[in-house]
Image (tube, rainbow, N blue to C red; front, side, top):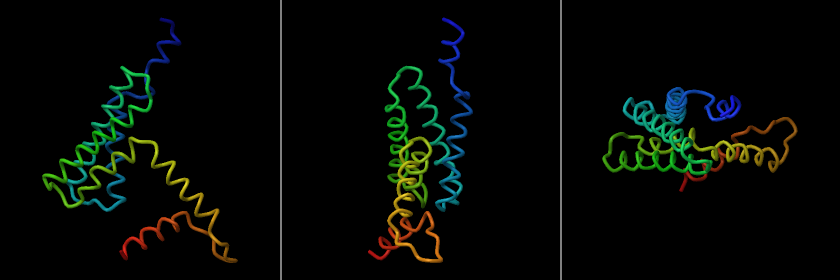
Length: 146
């Protein structure tokens, strides 16, 4: 094995650091979404950490890039389902959602597309700049009245 092949096989950061950052990032998203209960944050962080470990373990044995986020999302969903079933905390759905937002790439792309659509399709008002979250706010407020 040449030096370049060896470098190509190594990951950019260690698995432990990647998993810790995934767990901390999921916990930060939990705080942003309103999870202030310590048990909720601990479960969110644990789910993110284990999802990061699972992604790196799969990356070592498979070249399929789609199975890594799928397995991480499946694990986060399973931990979230156990949390809901056992009624561990008040913000149970965040235990499933927050790790997925960190470990799966799709939500970032979807959020960007929603923001771009908001800027593109909103009628222009002379002195008001469109805000990125206007479309999301309208969607959430319309659902709150149902």
